[in-house]
Image (cartoon, rainbow, N blue to C red; front, side, top):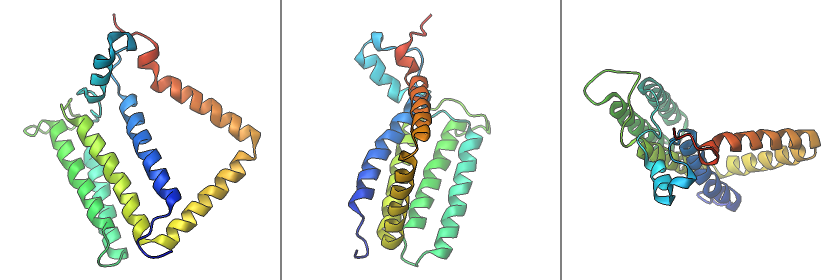
Length: 189
């Protein structure tokens, strides 16, 4: 495989897991007052509700610090022309701006509040995470192939165990029920 070539399997994983990750993060904080019976426009508006992605500001600051440390560490260990540290620093900048927005830009309330654009910051970070995986894979084709092979082998071994598959099925069922609860039960008073 030539440098800069990303395996097709990884491309499929990125294009599958990025929207799925975004959807799960949106559903975790989806407003409970928007049942399916309220109409499609109201339900779709729940995905851009100010409550989506309203995490406490201190968790966002901690994430920004972790991203900066990872970027510095990547800069030391990667080649000089590596784009991985740049993407990590971009993620740190977006997370820092998000934290300031959660604090209201003027006060130092680390518990945060609901910012009108938290859903957008969260969406941008999910896309940047996908870009990070893409860039890393393009810069490390051998390690990418090895990671794909290892993941495929682990999944093959896991699938051979019916107890493991049963347990995973039960776990996924309850996770889906929890994430889809706003649509399954009306919480309106």
